[in-house]
Image (tube, rainbow, N blue to C red; front, side, top):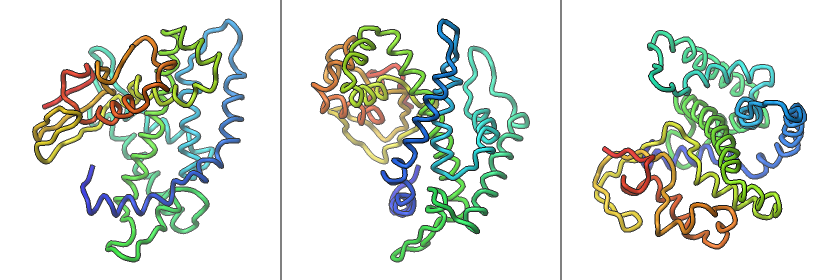
Length: 278
């Protein structure tokens, strides 16, 4: 997290790397990969959706955007995933010494990839970011540290959060079969369903923190200068008309829902059980 003017500078440098055109170029490949993954599922057999499409598809999208060679993607993912895994029950994360090899692997690979893109840029987001230059501000380019943080964050967050959202979204649909039926009966609901599933689920298992620098008011809720972490968007009487009908009713209340989603990083603790403030 950073404030302006550094935030504005970094944003300008990285914006050119992620454009609608660049994302659209991935569509045909992503459709092919999706069909191939689903074709592997045998009728009536158990299938681990989390380690299948939910993990594989986000991984391939992020790696394609960053220009990571195909034969290196799963090796890098193993190192990244080990650092973002959340223990269950009484399990512990492990000692710093036990986790250091994965961190070292990520760091060394990232810097070797950055050096390769600097010397031989290709048509990918990382190459664009590394070679981006601003004419009206100093420093005019990304430092090695800034580039490494950008690469680390976009790879980890882009793959892990999407994996979690896909898996949790499917779980939500199976737990609400009437909504699953509504969606399958009317595919035009899909865009609003995606937005609502992102709000309904908790894509980030380790939520980002927001720290107001001064007393502020968000959605009529006064917040002191404190640190808050959100697990997911709130479901309240002002933003949520029926917790059992979220796909079919979403289109009727887009303003309320989007306002609710934006407020999820700033509202007060009693709103959602996913909140921790202190």
